[in-house]
Image 1 (cartoon, rainbow, N blue to C red):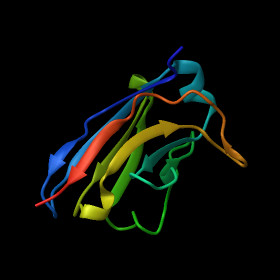
Image 2 (cartoon, one colour; image 1 turned 180 degrees about the vertical axis):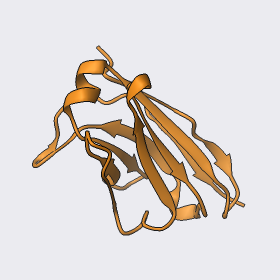
Image 3 (tube, rainbow, N blue to C red; image 1 turned 90 degrees about the horizontal axis):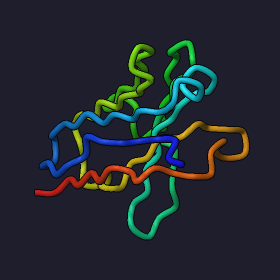
Length: 118
């Protein structure tokens, strides 16, 4: 069972932009705070941005001022607009529901690859 479907990744040059999207079930979307995570090669998965059910966003320091997260209730989807991309943003991006001890859902989607390179 796949709870999350991510899309929108690609290859861009430094300074470029991408918009990621993640869809999930109506139940998950309506109950849980949602977040975007990323995992770079050789590194642990990290939370980049999150948005509550009421739409309040929060960002990791690395994303502040460059990324914007929001949710669209009619689509059961969350989005991540990424601007001023840097090579350090290169990673596979995933969505899930953040919990105090990690995430609520142990099965991750396939993710979407973001590559920033000149």
